[in-house]
Length: 477
Image (cartoon, rainbow, N blue to C red; front, side, top):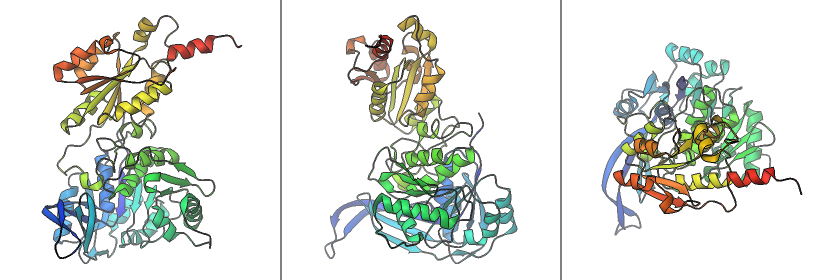
């Protein structure tokens, strides 16, 4: 399996600061919170955050951005090394900084400084655009995209994240990803009321035509994203709604979508995975292999960006990257344990995947920070279920399970029970369906060795593979 495709990010780098602390009282002279014991945490901002997130996915990322030689630039370079190669453009003025002052996990003020703009494009920067296999533009209107517009027009990017202060995307861009408010500001007015999904659909269709883009995906915060090719839009809903740090989900969306397009995914696949990556709760950053597309890979390991804490919860620059192969169950479990998370294991034959299985797996995933599904091999199913089983070869249920958003990895075992696999995996929680009694769980005593817990979850009534096969075999009445 080859690794994720490399990516060239083009945009206006920022340095973000969080002055986070405790807010437990109001100031005596004004109705504002007093932030005690605050500390200064820095992180890449704007397009630099997009590039950093793509690199944390395991990609080889180069960022072209206007930077000078001020202290903010030196701090940004420290944060990006060794994740992102920085290809600088000359900057007039200081690198822009944005300082947020949060109280009770919500920003109460933002302090901006630095008005630097990209002054010109170097020949090295122009050549990098011409030679890059995949380009993502994140335009904050500070000159970088404008300085390289001729090269970008000659070789349209895979994805473009626009800003009202920036220029239009290069014609022929495969996917443009404005947020709802940005799309409303950028779309031509048509005199009709502008609210709700209908307005977002009109804006997206108008922008497809205005920008001569292949597709526009308008991100809708907790509602997901609306994908338009110019006519009937596709609504991609968010699988979960979180009310955490709202800083950075657009960058997470753009990084995921551009990366998967570089890997060869279809636009619809990339948008679905990007919605999941920006909103669904999970424990680690998203990573995707070039030979496995969105449904099978990113859904299996998508970052819960907002649910996991947003940009404010990004790993430190010196934190270890995720493993290259996101479907290695032991690597997934070890990564989550290292981050002090909870490993959940579920299992079964899954010979004929049905709604009962899906409901159980979704509930199981909510019990921890990753879900590993332990699946009986074909020989094991045959010994347990008898002749004629399995109905489907092992590759089919494994492929379907890996495509589920709440499944992080799949492990196959050949024995009649998964005890040996569980002993190697050492999950914190072991889940079984409610058709078992607590006394029927031979692995319950095994889990006690590492203080794991076996739990039962209810199945949907009347759902079982055996019953479904029996009903299918009955003569038609």
